[in-house]
Image (cartoon, rainbow, N blue to C red; front, side):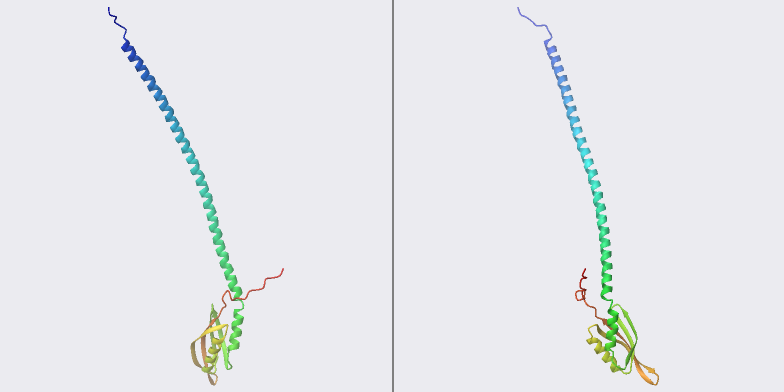
Length: 193
């Protein structure tokens, strides 16, 4: 006789497979959740680290900007002080220029001529005077041309004017003051101390 198994082994097997599938599915879901949480935690930590780095960089950039502003302010002060120093040095080197100018004008002035006005603007000097003859104006111009302190004499105007019973000549002349170059300027000996 033949034995027939009447137990529903296929259904039992199907239930076992279904339970295994649900267990596997639950395990996969748990592993997926753990992986997702780990990825989220890692990315969150990276985000927090990047935010702190950005904040640090922003603070350091602000410090560097302050330093740059301070350096620019110091550069402007330095440039201002150097400009003032240059003005003082120029005034110091040109301090005796007026004395030399008047000395040279007196030395180069021929007899029979006198000056009425001397006006200086920068290196240009305008001289007004009176002379007995026009030839003396030519002599004065030659003398000024050969001078070491004055140069480039240019006659602006000469005209005859009555002076008492005689006639005189009034003239206007421009002369340039020859300034020494900064390298040629005499240096003071250092003070002994």
